[in-house]
Figure 1 (cartoon, rainbow, N blue to C red):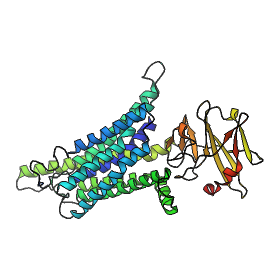
Figure 2: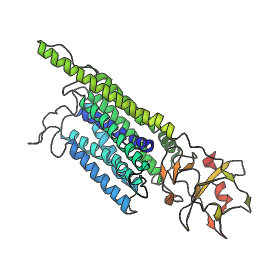
Figure 3: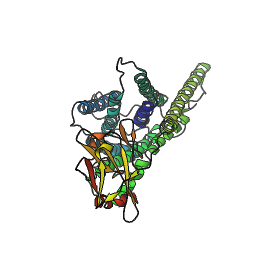
Length: 425
């Protein structure tokens, strides 16, 4: 239960909060456009529901291809979504920033087109995991309603409900007029776009570096590694923005009025705003506890045993296949000529194939990997590896290590380990 409560919250909450703040900025009616018949904000082909549907259809196509074929590669899908998303986010950010002091949102058809594209691409990036997670649920041998399956479903649905209610409350508590207390909704939308833009830029750079699509500049690699190791900061920033947004909405409706009926109406509206704001703050607190305390509790049992040091003879290390045929991840270490400990891993992938690589990757450095049930997981960024891809370059996969099979054993040359010692210094 806790596993999927954390997974779904981590996957969905940042996008939900950013979308809610953006919707709040575009909630107030916009000036008419030059096009006849195009209604402000609710134009048939530019409304948020159409944007979400567009993103959902893209995610559904990817999820179907991922489940039924080996053609779909998540990193290339992400590039196809994030590149236009970053471009339109920058355009929308510039438009909102330009009109920040003049009203709640930028007027004109261009801002609405950018708004539509941002919502569609954010949805397309967020939704594939939500569609694929249910396929990871274990099913009992005799019945689908076994306890483990039920707990995972409860965690999955609870996270979805919590995220949706939090985002919906943030949007609903925005009054349908210019805010008179605190920064306008547009101010928070601008900051949310900035946070999401930086996150998207780092993700794009990570994919480019992992796939060797750009030169490995030292400064860029350092920035990406910092971004990966501090990925939760973007979520915390969005939670902080939503928290402040909710605080400024508390009792912002004045209780004055020209007659008792009007004063009662305004007091009722003030109480409603307060209840909605408190609901949003409660949802934010529960979500934050899930991704901090819950995550800490779930990962407390990750304890790595020391890697095994094998003797080298004539420039070779020999590992018996019988020692690694159990399907588990095996960790080894080799001490180089200058005393550097170079770690490497071995896992059996199939009857005839083995995954052999360094206990390090091009993006996360020498943080290493561990086994969680039947999965191999990066210690730094918690990305799950498909065991069949270990031994191939790219993404967060271990850096491949050359090996040969001879006489019922894996043979690794020490010179190949010596050449990689820079990664472990």
